[in-house]
Amino acid sequence: MQKDCAFQRCINPACAATFDILQALTACPSCGELLDVVYDWDRLPVPKSLSDFEKRWTSRTAPLDFSGVWRFRDLLPFASDEALVTVGEGQTVLYHNTTLAREVGLTGGRLHLQYVGFNPSGSFKDNGMAAGFTHARMVSAGRVACASTGNTSASLALYASVLGMQAVVFIGSGKIAYGKLAQALDSGALTLQIRGDFDDAMRLVQEAAAKLGLYVLNSVNPFRLEGQKTIMYRVLEALSWEAPDWVVVPGGNLGNSSAFGKAFMELRDLGLLKRLPRIAVINSTGARTLTALVGEKNLSWNSGAVDQDTVARYYAYLDENSIRAHTLATAIEINRPVNLRKCLRALDVTHGVVREVPDEDIIDAKALIARSGPGCEPASAASVAGVKLLVDEGVIAPDERVVAILTGNVLKDPDVPVKYNSLKGAELTKALGLFSTRPPRYQNLPIEVDADLGSIVNALEGGVS
Ligand code: F0G
Image 1 (cartoon, rainbow, N blue to C red):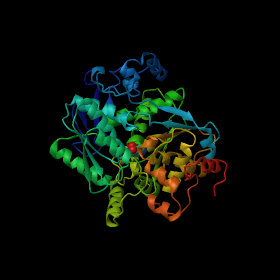
Image 2 (cartoon, protein in one colour):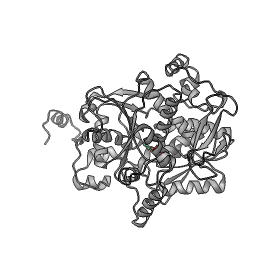
Image 3 (cartoon, protein in one colour):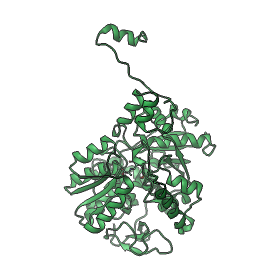
Image 4 (cartoon, rainbow, N blue to C red):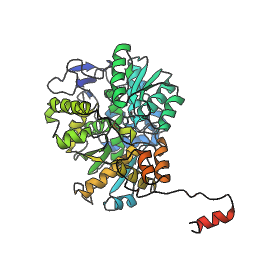
């Protein structure tokens, strides 16, 4: 990287204030909007072709070339090679899933699943943390902090432990899957269980950071999203650098969708990608702010002049009616997504769409995914449930090429599949906090047998009633 070739810029075109790369900011000090990391490509080497990145596979014994984030470092050149942080993140698998394609109404071979659960901490967050921690070290951050529904905190705790930094995580008490809580605790992060939900934790981490000088690693940190752009580079790489028609991703705090949009926008502007995929962001019906604002209130990017009154009115409506986010897909249990405006920009650039799916569809999709591949955590399955909905609606045509992002590892939240596969009727509805008594479509009930061979044979031969 050449000096001063990267800087931070307010995403509000009417402000567009710029800031040095060495400032630790989560919002524009002038107008309060989100910030982008931007590059002066006139002074930086522009990659000649995307396929050149594949050559780095041959030198993957070098940690930076092994990293699925830093293999693409020329597309996020804000730090020198010596400054880059890696724990081996970004190993993803894009696999065809013909069984699932048929189930969701696509022609066989048209559905690809991008499984991001192989990351060191088991979710896509590591892509962002590699870049975020690189910046944290560049600015000599002291304590690093985040609010989290679980995966951000697991990832932050892992990187902090490797780098010997102090980590503080803010989580909504009882609002986090056990696997994720275990990770933060095991990695030694100071874990604050806030008596509230993610939206409370997010507000509080920002207030605490302002007071105590914590370095915030939520996706309001623009460097986090630089790392998450690489998820899309790897999708393109796995498809021989041809854009799919659709990228379908669960929406929570809307960091991923924002990062994906920025990745595509930049590749287009650099002349490296001619046709952009459309992005579909999928909410759970229990945490549907994006769907409500875009789908019902027609909120849009509007060239950067986002109608803030509509957003404020919606949040006031949530408050007046004491509406809190509620979904078994706890990772996306968020009603005040911090990246809302960046996501609107991504939807604008990619002609994207937004939908919501009920928890019942999410867990059925999750069960189905696990029957034909490595599985995923509940929130991740919203992507596949969303594909089905969009195909049913005729928005996605059966022969379009679709990539659904499986954002987190199947083992993150074992509680949900155990309940899904072992409870029935009202008990299941209650245990999973479902809104309906619709029976699960892919339940696999365990069979209890006596500890003798006869009973086992009976069970396997279908003799057990
Ligand atoms: N899927 C998983 C598994 C997640 O952990 C998250 C977010 C999302 C999807 C939504 O992604 O926020 O980029 O729209 N998890 C955050 C956390 C909020 O704290 O771990 P997004």
